Structure formats: C-alpha cells, structure tokens
Image (cartoon, rainbow, N blue to C red; front, side, top):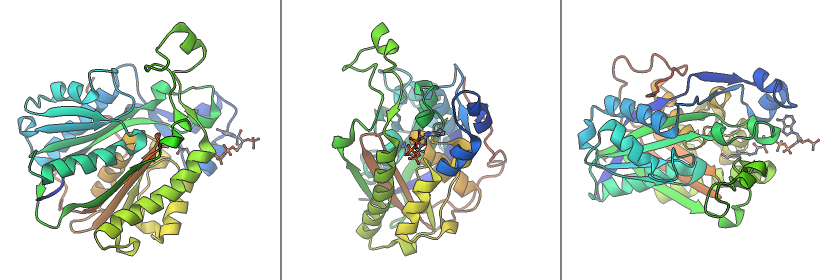
Length: 347
Ligand code: UT7
C-alpha cells in the first residue's frame, strides 16, 4: 500500500445570501434564537441553475487548478451528495462530463452530511492500493431545494455549496493516515426526505403531504452528533497511535456551533484548534467539511506537516472521520483572495 493524500482543494457557493433577518419574515423565529441555538448568521441559497452538479463542477475545477492536474489524468470521481441533480444518472457522471474527465470512473456516495468524509476514506484507499491514480473527491449539496420554508425547526439550518479535493499518491506516512466509518440504520426516521424515492414515488399526493421536504427530529440528531463526533475521532486517532492532544486542526461538519463546542470540549481540543465557518454558510451537508478544509488551509490555519482531523455525521444515521498528515505547503499565487465566499458557479 502507498500513501494517498490531498494535493488540491476547491469550493463553490451560490451567489444568493439569505440572512436570519430575512428568515424572520418567513417563519416565527428571530436572529437571536437562530444564532444562540445554532451559531448561524446567514447561508447561501442556490438559484434555479445552481445545482449539486454545477457547484460540484466549479469546486472540482478549482481543486484541479490548485493541484496542477489535467482533467484527463483523473481516473476516479466520487461525489458525496444526497441532493443529486437527477435520481440517475449520478451527479458524479454529470460532473465528469462537464470537466472532461474522460478517463474517470464516476459514482455518487450517499452518506448525507458525512458524504465527503466517507468518500475521502474510500477514494484514498483506492488510490493507496494502486487501483486508481488520481481521484476527485467532491461534497456537493443543495438542501435548500428540499427545505420546507414553513418549518422553523429545519429551514433556519441549511445552506448550499460544494467542496472538492484532489487525492493522489503522497510521500509515505503522509496524507490519510486512518479513518473510521459507521452507520446506525435504526435512526433512518430521524432525518429523512420521505417522498420521491421508490417507497413514496412522486405524485400529487406526496406533494400535498409535503413528503418531498426534509423531516427531522432535531433533539435526537443533536444528541447523536455530540456523542459520535468525539467517539469516531478518537477511534480514528487511536488507529494511528495518536490522541486528541496531537491534533493541530480539527475540521468538523459545520451543523451547529453548540454541537461542535460540546464535542470538542469532551475531546479536550482547544477552541483555537477547531475550525468553524457555520456562521456564514449554515449546514451545507456533504459540502461543509471540504469548504471548511479549503478555508482553513487558505487562511493558514493548516500548514504542511500538521495533523488534521475531519469528521462528519448525518442522516442514516452515518458518521465518518479521517486523520490526515497535511502534505500541501503553499497556496498557489492568486488563490484565496475571495475567501469571504465569492460564487464560482458554472451555470
Ligand atoms: O447534518 C445534520 C443535520 N441536523 C442537525 O445537525 C440538527 C441537530 N439539532 C439541532 O441543531 C437542534 O436540535 C436545533 C437547532 C434543530 C433545535 O435546537 P434545540 O435547542 O434542540 O431546540 P428544540 O427543538 O428542543 O426546541 C426548543 C424550542 C421549541 O419550543 P417549545 O416547544 O419549547 O415551546 C421549538 O418549537 O424552540 C422552538 N423552536 C424555535 N423557536 C424559534 C424550534 N425552532 C425554532 C426557531 N425559532 N427556528
């Protein structure tokens, strides 16, 4: 087995910003409640032509540019998404066509908000084994298209976006060192879009019954999240003989600052080693970890040789964490100027 790691990163966000103040005009809520309970101030909302494939393509194109990799040299695309452009073909195939990655196998991986970290583990194994040479790992979601804007328990939480990483062979002992993947299918009912699949195919009735929207038991998901983020991170770290004290930068799924604070307090990771941007983007599902990773790197919060832990959790229930020894040393000239979140959308 070789070592595989991240050699390029990218992100893409829709242009439209939706603030808490605007949501106050839609449902019975307040900026104060949303910020205190979630840490979210605003989020990006995809327009008609902004989709998981368009945002995923833009993020992946930037990651390829940063890595200096030609699209034809990519031989694997895995897209973590649960808001695909079409039920089939996969969003990864839409992205493959738009990027011109003509030599790449392509598939989607459905692990909801844990999708990118799941895909990073799977993709890095396929590269480390020598089966694939160059993988594009993408997290892309547009959950606001599946949000019930009359349900204050969910509509304040989600935002749209995409992030991407190029994964390639790296020096031994660097890149992805270990991972932990898991699922608890007894929680399938806690966070679900019930309509539009084979169980409740789309019909006038499913729309009248609002089954095409996200349904969530928020408190249950919250309890699960706090517990699993810590447990999974500790398992991943233990697999390579490390502990939370060794972590230089912790990049968790950006769902809620209270979840992140509780989990990192339990782990004993100091706040200055934890990266968050949930205030600006809300919960962008599978996109949250790669967007955060991209921003942490461009802000200089992650440097070459640092020990980085990424961890996600989501519908399923699913969870995933990876430990990485960072390999990228410098941000190429010209990247990172628009860190506040400029749109890079391929419409
Ligand atoms: O990627 C995974 C995705 N999911 C998550 O990460 C969700 C995890 N869960 C959460 O983040 C939190 O459970 C929420 C932010 C969703 C809710 O916070 P909470 O502290 O668990 O509130 P709650 O659901 O226990 O509700 C407390 C009260 C309720 O009122 P009553 O029954 O006490 O009168 C709710 O009706 O807050 C009310 N409430 C709101 N009030 C104002 C719920 N949503 C809102 C709202 N604005 N948006």
